[in-house]
Image (tube, rainbow, N blue to C red):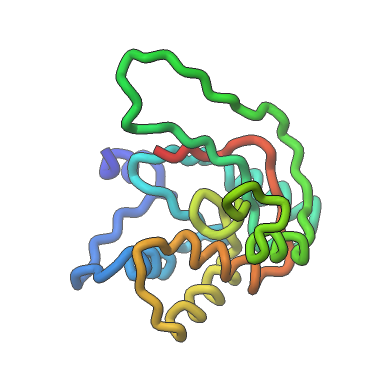
Length: 178
């Protein structure tokens, strides 16, 4: 459970809000305010996050200098899949890390350029990591906008690519959804 994980790993903190949380946006904001690290990521309790993602972030920063966000191929597993039924999941084994052009990222996300039927965006705070500085900037802009909704990952992705300057992508999956 999370309490025993927090005892074993000091990077994990359990935050109990003093007032009821109104939305996922508010919950994420409380978590970001409580975070102390130079890199921030959000995953759900039933997801898996590679603890070495922070080592990857520091490596990338050493190679590229300043970097605002690092994204990767997050694996997605269907939690409703039939138990005992075999299926296969393709797992990228390359570990290349490349810098991506901000203009291309804006075109991909906002104009869906090069996308089949959904925009491609591996950046943001959900199953990616962003610098503390960018997280605080994005959080401030969300507060000014006063937007409350159920899908904060897309709000964060959109604002990350708008407000960030330097992006890196790691082919190797560093997290699993569900």
